[in-house]
Image 1 (cartoon, rainbow, N blue to C red):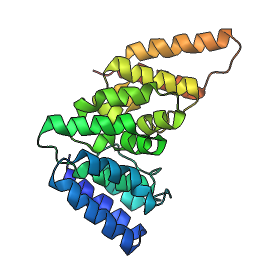
Image 2 (image 1 turned 120 degrees about the vertical axis):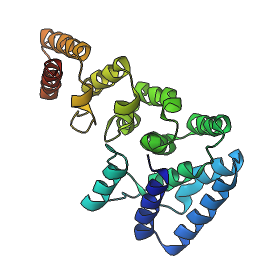
Image 3 (image 1 turned 180 degrees about the vertical axis):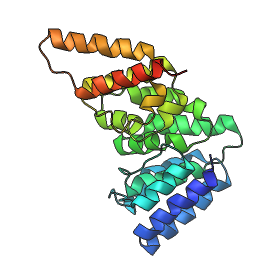
Image 4 (image 1 turned 30 degrees about the vertical axis):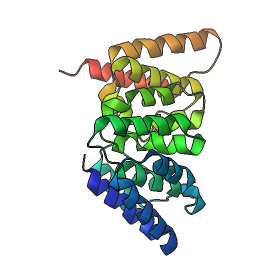
Length: 233
């Protein structure tokens, strides 16, 4: 994945939407982050970014979204905020040549994150190097009882499709249906459809029907995708 190009794309979006003083502060902090792993400086910059970058919608155009998908297939940051884009710039600026300290600082950032920081971290997962090494953090978002955190992982985010094994993927789909998250914006539904998921969804639907509870039509659409997948050569 072209990380440098993604950074340039993020900077282009921010420069169109922020004032000069905010961009200057972001640039200065990013240069400092790039020099070396400095946990204290990074934690402070990541946490305090909202002092000069608002939590307003990024509000990308159709052309900007198309460019995002071109650089990282499946990435659709249509619901991103300005502060999340700025934090993604910080994350992509962290030196990652030495894997151990890089992963350590990310793990500590995840562990100390408040809600808005957790959303930014989770949305940025598909952009970060060493995708497999972030799997446990993604699983924590999957298990979260905060719907916005779960949705940050599940919706418009190609990380689950690229990295999750079938049991974890199936768990995500079933939880989305259970908590009322629409499946329409889950990337890779057709690609990751599988026979076990079909059985899980049908069993869940039967339980709902026995209890006299409605079954979301999207469940049956997902079952159909699984059936189509089964007949592929």
